[in-house]
Amino acid sequence: MSYKRAWDLVMVMNASFKEPLVTTVIGGSHGGGATLTSFGHHVLKEYLSIQAKSEQYVFSEMHDFLDLLAR
Image 1 (cartoon, rainbow, N blue to C red):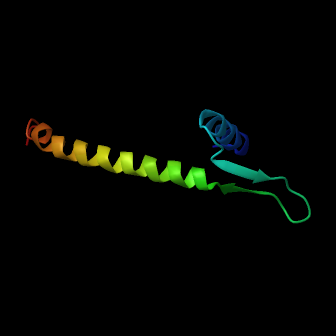
Image 2: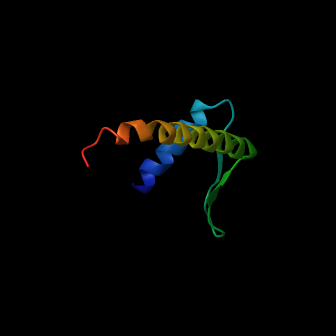
């Protein structure tokens, strides 16, 4: 992924939520950077929880599906 594409996605995510997920500091002699906000940490925690629950559900359903495959 290009640098520009990554920053474009950060800007889209920031605009899509009630609060910014990432804050940025413009470069200079000390360099710039980006930091995940406390709200960003909260959103990430929620997303990871949803992902874990989804994986558990899919795994529980896969047993029956795998039984349909040829051996």
